[in-house]
Length: 493
Image (cartoon, rainbow, N blue to C red; front, side, top):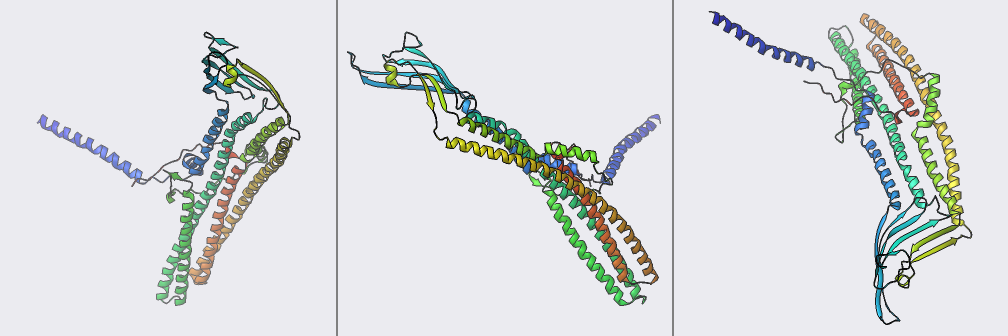
């Protein structure tokens, strides 16, 4: 009997233990099934752009091009290994008759950014050759040392060094172009995002209006069959249904169009991704405007950080390098050189080293003076462009601030208009219920309410777009990354 009871208790425990996970899993499934979608945010869209947008990735190749330009410029100064063998056959005047004499040079040549060129190596004599200087190894080997030294033109600044300096500016220039692309993409995405939100909210308003018209049509049709209203009122109600259905279809098409446009900012696996309609957010309730002190600080910040202004600074620096090179080209060319004899006939005759000093003075200097004038003209133009860009930045900030203030005023007026329109709509419906008015006037009041609500939606969207324009104007998106990680969310069935 005891064993029987123990078996029954053990069986009950096993059954209850098996039932608990099933119930928990079922509860979890029910909770997941009713989980609402996470609203899509502008920060998430910006993070998505940073992560996978092809235009931003394409702008990132500017960094690769900048590194390539730097390597290309450094190539002018890299050491070069040279192995040169030269032999000369001649008839000797002495008893040896015809001889073949020459040398084999193994040396390293290099160039310095200051304009100096130098070489060092070893020469191995071939045949019976005379080595007057720096010989070793039984007199048939020679130490090779050489140098080329510009003393005026080409000293410190020369075409190769100028290209190296320009290549050093290629990397910050690439950063500026990436920042500009990022700024423009963020502004375009923000504008498109709020257009999409406004289109979805507008189609919801139109669908509600259509549902009201359909319910009224059924009501009027029933009253007409009972003889309470004229059949013409049924036609009027039906016509309003068809009118609102056409508007609702057009609004739905607008939603789809804005959805496709927004997908061009949401790339997944190199393919645009359509945003889910169940992730459409509401318009933010807060309406904040920057304070006057903040606006002043933002203008100063924008003058320093907007990519357009920073790019002008890079262009001016590159032009300064060209101007310095052009002024150096006005100097006469005075070059000193010391190097081993490289002609076989001279080496055979015993000429080990040669030394030289060359002076060249262009008479008219037309080319150099033209380069200086061109660079000075560009420098003056960059100064004027810089002033224009700075004032343009100030105007952009003021324009965005004006858009914010006017959108707030429009929103307040539109909200008041909507309240009054709804009051008139309710009053007209009450009169219609008493039989004191017709369907036509009720429809007109409802249309007015729909138009007023659409104005509120447009004002809210314009306010958010004005805020985005302000962020673009102050250059906020050129220097900071969004803190939100893109969310890949799907509701479970």
